[in-house]
Image (cartoon, rainbow, N blue to C red; front, side, top):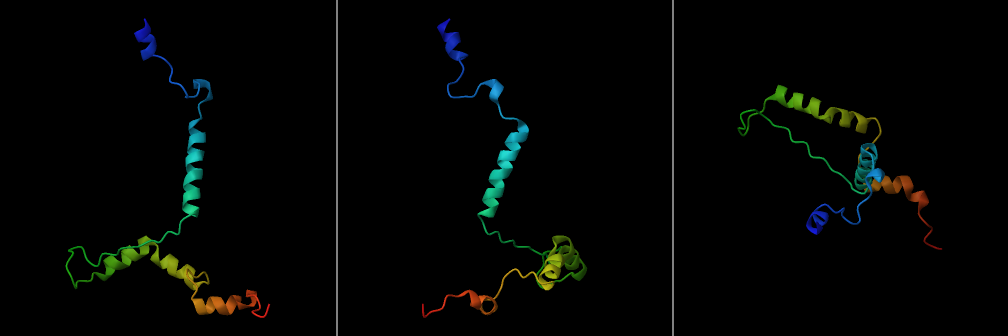
Length: 107
């Protein structure tokens, strides 16, 4: 009947079943889009450290804080920064280091 044909008709604009993208290809596409998005942003991370389990002000549980700092990667970030890979370069140091690239103002 015409009604059954209309109910089970193939939707227009869809690909044929033989040309479906594989799961691996879909993953690769999604990963590529994600990497493109990440490259276009400047992420900043905030790490929250809890001073105590009781959530009370003016209480500081040093072993607990030390453990959080170790597991969150803070010490590794500080070590990397100290070894010569700064996260941010102060303007004065940047200008001093790269002033030789500035164009001569007389030109």
